[in-house]
Image (cartoon, rainbow, N blue to C red; front, side):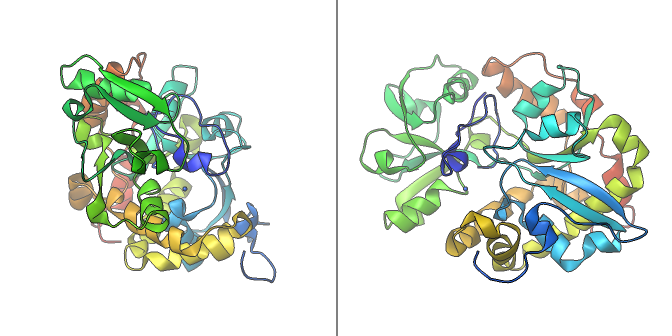
Length: 360
């Protein structure tokens, strides 16, 4: 099930095929650039363990909590030095990096391509998910809101090529045959504003910001319907590694998870701090816009929360949810040969992180 390539398109990249994924999807100071911003941690301090972590996208605010943890020294407190490997248009996928042993851990922006890589011979294990709900969504105008398949019958849907299986799945999950016209659209939701279609496939962390900044709209002028509200729940920013690596480096990975959770918890208090770190430090060469990065961070923070995280702590994953509603949605989009969710999700590392309670 392919989801929109919006945030990738902003850099002129072609979206990776196969996602029920997001992920999700969008230099200012002079002086010496820190090693982390260069994509390398440099030589690890004596007595520390270096972890190479492949990111599913560029070093923008999407990784806010990791930047907060790194900047606050939480990884150092765990005896870790992190080498952040930037993803993006010219980088290998996180699955390829972990499979080739050029990265120890990967953070996959979306789950479908990660799931589909496992039957190809990869023994990947998921140890946490930053986003409990992916940012993939349908964007419509308040004058003609789209909140269900019924609202799309006979209508024109705007989106990136390859997203059609997702829209088809929305219809099938509601017991309807797909009945819509699809028109390919670029990153900017301008065609939606112009009335060329009733809905636009988007990342709720990106295109709504464009409506606000470029078209003078407010939140009352548009409607964002996450795919989870259309029967397609998804995890995003999934932390994973090869089973053998995780078994051999369990304590280091537990330390990484604990430090990262502390960073994401800190991020909730002031979204501007991580945006500043992204713009002026980690993504200093990317020409990121401060206002956009702050707003993106504000919009993504709610995605880190769920009933499960409220009771059991951040990053939690539910194998039953994946095997049930998530796999049902993938099947409706024509995706088959999915791995046993119980075999690929390991929450025992997070159990150790939260051994003394969910407040770290």
